[in-house]
Every structure is written in C-alpha cells, then in structure tokens.
Length: 385
Image (tube, rainbow, N blue to C red; front, side, top):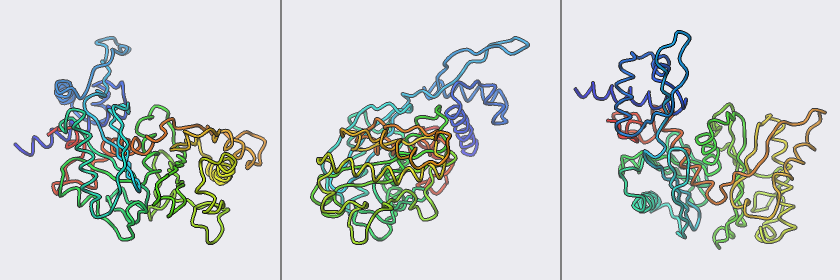
C-alpha cells in the first residue's frame, strides 16, 4: 500500500512538473509526454484540481476529426508561497512570493551574521516571516542567498565574507536535522540569475548575465571591502554556470592593481565614498562596463540584467554598458544584446533565492536536503504524499 501511494505521488509530481514547464497544456498532451495512460492522467489531474494545485484555464481547439475541445491546465499561483532570504554582513532581507513570482511581502532588518548561529537564524527568520502570511502550512520551501563560494547542489558554504567563513559549513546537513522543508542556499548573484530563469520562463532566454552591484553602509562592510560588492550570475544554454569549484561569477576587475582591498581599480580609500560621489560613481560604472563588455561579446550573450542597490542611483548604467559593448565590438553588424535593469532593487537577491528554490523543486527529482528515503522534493514541498 505504501509503495502504491509513493508511486502515485511520484506520478503526480511528474504531472505537476510537466504543467509548470508547459503552461496551457492539455491532459492528452501530458499523457503523450509522460507515456502514461490517459485514465491515469485524468484521475491524477482530478486530484490535483481538488487540492487546488492545478487550475483549468481555457478550452483549446478541437482536432482535425472534431471531438471534445481539450482543456488547458496551469499551476495555481496561489497554492502556496516560497520565502527567499538574503543574509548580509549586518542585515538580512526576506521576501515571500507566490508560484508566479508575484511578491506578497517584503522585510529588511538589521542583524549581525555569525557562523555559529547562522542556521538557526535562517530558520527563525523564515518561521517568523511565514507566521505573518498565515503560518507554515502554505510555505513550500526556503531559498537563501549570500555572498561566498557556495555549492548549491550539496548545500555547502565553502567560503563567505558575511560569515567570516574559511572552512566548509554543511548548511544542508544542519537544516535537515531541524526541518523537513526544502531549503537551498546559493551565491547571491547566482540566485538573481535563478530568479530570472524561474519567473521569466516565457522569455526563452538561454544566455545572459545578471550583474549584481551592492552598496553596504555598515562599519564592518566598509572596513573589509570598502562597502561595495559586485558579482555575476552567468547563464549559459539555460543553466546557471557555477563552475567546477563554484567560483564562476566571482569578480576582480581586469584593471585592479596589487594591494587594493577592493575589487576594482579605484583605490579602497576612495571607493568607500560610493555611491554618494557622483563623479566617482560614473568612473566606477564605466570600469564595470568595460569588464562586462568583453564578457558579453566573447560569449555572445542575449541579455544583461543589472540589479541590486545600483538601481536606486541616478546613473544610466544600461546606457554606459551598451556604449562599451559597441565600442568593444569590431564587426559592422550590431551586437544583439539587450541591456536593462532588473527592476527588483534591494529585493533582487531574496527574490532570486526564492526563484532558485522554485526552479530546483520544479525541475529536479533530487535535492541536497533530501531525506534518507530520497523523496522527490516536489512531493514534499507540495504535500503530495
């Protein structure tokens, strides 16, 4: 009986994944894609409709031979919510989104981050925030984003400035001891890239960059790296590229000089005045643009999203980057790369962390925090068993 129930739950997960990846799909098309009996699909979809996870959208056109019109299916965006958390040196921000990526609530607060209490702090933030949205029952999972070298597949933080961490932290292992909810942790810029993949599937983007620029005003951030952080989320062929050692997207300017504590050519002593100094801000953005232009043209990127605190500043970063991309190009044909703001501002990382969790749950049959029985994360997140 237990085996049959588990198999039923797995079939339901396959159906839900298929609908998520192919909105407006019909029952017949699901059966064709999954190789399952139409009666099985009909029964499973009926159950998913009953619990409110799937909704019927519209009727399609009849086939050449007539007959009943197929009914299109989609995921109910309000079935539950996902929490995304950004952990910084001296603060955190947290956002809740529905399954369509619509922001339900957002909060930012000061909090000193230390390795010893990090896992408990993350769980506490998630539980407190979920309580304001009706409790944990509708919470489907939590994504966490922060600066550092992070293996998001295994849930291991290898190195992190916010945590002053130089030895690996098994985040997923520690979480599994405290919660059975799906949790995932990733580098902040990579999270932003995941967010674009998860919530903008219809755009069909395959190769793009997310350029994350953050300004931190806390004393600790200023002392350690000038209060300015920059990283890249890199998507190639529709997948976030983290590299073998999970360092893809870690950045140091090509114009950096030996001894500078900051990531850029601008001296550490000067960069602390960003973003208040308008002339220095333009110099900073031009330096970043020259670095990015080489990457965009070398890898033939489709789009560059620019996000983070830089969105709040009075400078046209997209225009400056566009000019550098064109200047870097040696052919007469124009570079076909769209450059624009992410429009999420200080919500970019927590929103992206939620997107990372959503994307991984809906596309992976294994998760870094899976229980010993290797339960499908979608089965657990959506309470299908």
